[in-house]
Length: 221
Length: 152
Image (cartoon, rainbow over all chains, first blue to last red):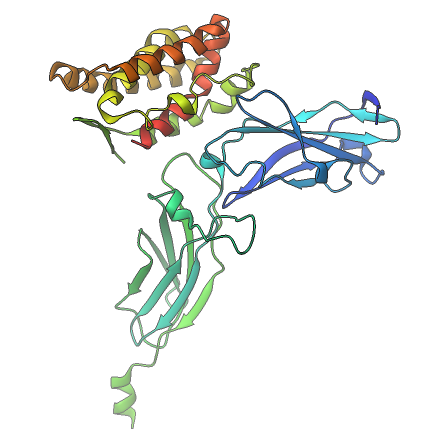
């Protein structure tokens, strides 16, 4: 539909929110039009190719996000996206992202964390975060397969002594030894890739108590 | 974190991550100046990792010389921070180029047909653009070059 271009202010803060290669374009409504019946149209561009492309599911929408994961699934390419706002017969000029490079910019989601306790130890088992997949039945790709130098930062907090420490590991298991028995410990893990800073997604904090010290338990009897 | 680059029988190490960290400080501002987004100088067809190992050293040497002699030297900006970053990048590239020079001295940096042809194509893409536009685009594509180097 034709509209008077520039009759509306542009959408703002247009950016790709990318986690494990799920790439969602987000933006804010034009400043003065909060609440008005504004609709949006999105286009994207593959750097080095010839023309802007449309995504039919993101034409004339009233939500302020558009999932472009499929369109930007080749993480070795670089992309742009742009959005324009429309309201009645007016529309804004396009608002454009910076060049988006999924391989460099995707955030690495947290690993799954399983804890098992001993008297003076806690065993931590991690499952690497999975890359976004188009269909649930697609085969799973772990982010570690894309980033061989992916590491984990494990933070441990002793709730009794209020002491906290962390260590960086590359494999998927870690045994914390020489802990205090009958003590509540909280563990949080984040995956990261050495290199330019990326936003980090820590796992949920999980707290477990080490078992009672068997030796002192026997003495008591 | 040093990275080993296997370029046929020429093997060198380079801190690509440090170079990437430095470049990330100016990446968005440099790329924002690139108005020819429908053009790409470093294309997948000419990539280092898809070049046969024995030709990689020569192709990389050509690329480093292109960046040193025609990109870093000619990037026009009044922003001192950007100029400091570019100087930092140039020094890192000089270090790598010096290591490749050692390979060349030891006859392990042979320029075969593949390297020569791929570099000719890259130079052609570079020279298709107006000079400063080419410099801006090439600098904005440093990520691609670093990615190629990481993949070797």
